[in-house]
Length: 165
Image (cartoon, rainbow, N blue to C red; front, top):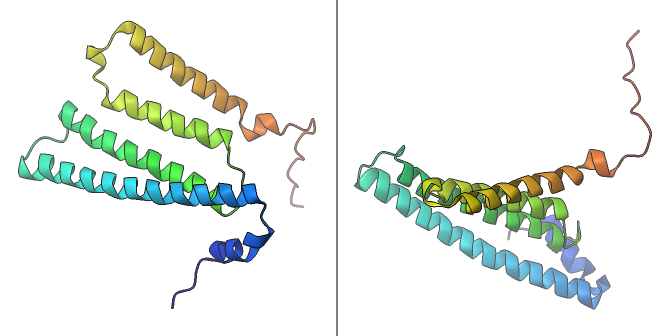
């Protein structure tokens, strides 16, 4: 019989030491992981069917803008779901807390990148484009403000590398 990964063994071993809320949080994260895994499998199946249908059955040009948008929109959806699922693994294994601001901002940036890819930019208003650009800039600034080099400044400079004599 195959052994469980070490982190699952640790979770089972430490379950009684967890508070009620920690158990609740871990259970919710586990259920969300299962739901997102199902979404990933379905989205992957739909992406494969779309690619096979559009590129092989219909013999369409993959560089056609509409096909490109459709295929890469599906790929970006999968990447967003995979990143979200990966983030939940930290919660389940108790490695990190439930809210990881940097990861949430990165997922939001992926979602905005997907929106840019799938949107026909000629069919939207200038105000809509301005709002989208504002969101992209705001997320970039927020992520920049949360970078480890900015949040962990201790006032000390890094020591110079040792010279080999």
